[in-house]
Amino acid sequence: MRSRLRARAASTRADRRSGSILRQTGGATSVEFSLLCLPFILILLSILQYFSFHVMRSTLSDALYQSAASPETALLLGQKEAYKNILCAQTIFSQTCLDTLKLEMQPLANVPTSATPITGTIFDPGSTNDVLLLRSSSSVINILPMFPTLTVKASVVFRRPTP
Image 1: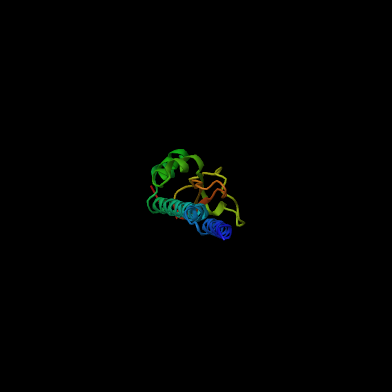
Image 2 (image 1 turned 120 degrees about the vertical axis):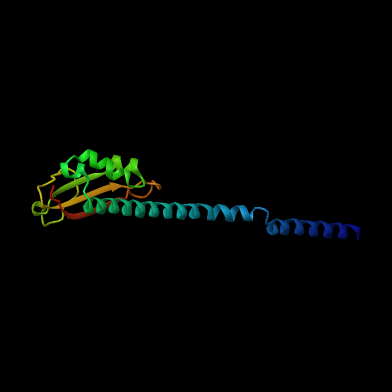
C-alpha cells in the first residue's frame, strides 16, 4: 500500500512540475516587449524622418518666397555662394543645406519646356524687369539608413526689380 502511495505521490509531483513550467509567466512580459520594441522604435524614427522632410521643405520654400518678395543683394548680383549661405541660414538643418543645396536661377524665357533636373550649374541673374525662375533642391538628414535619402525641391518665379 505504501509503495502505491509513494508511486502516486511521485507521479503527482511530476505532473505538478511539468504543469508549472507551462504555467510560468515570469518571462512573458520580456518576450512581448522585445517583439514590440523594434517595430515601435522604427515607427517613431519613421515619423521623425517624415517630420524632418516636411519641415525642411516648408522652410526652404518659405525662404525662396521671401527672396522673391524682396530679393537679396547677393541674389541680384548673381553671387551664388553668398545667396546659398543666406538661404541655408533660414532653414532648420542649415549644415545639411549648405552641404547638399543646389541652386539654379535663369530668365524664364531660357527655361526649357521639358522637365529638367536641378543640377545647380546655371545661375544667371538676368537684367532689369526679367522674369526669373529660381529653383533649389537639397537632401534631408537621413535618420533611417535603410530608407533612401529624401530630396526636397522648391521653386519660385519672380520679376527682377528695377534698381
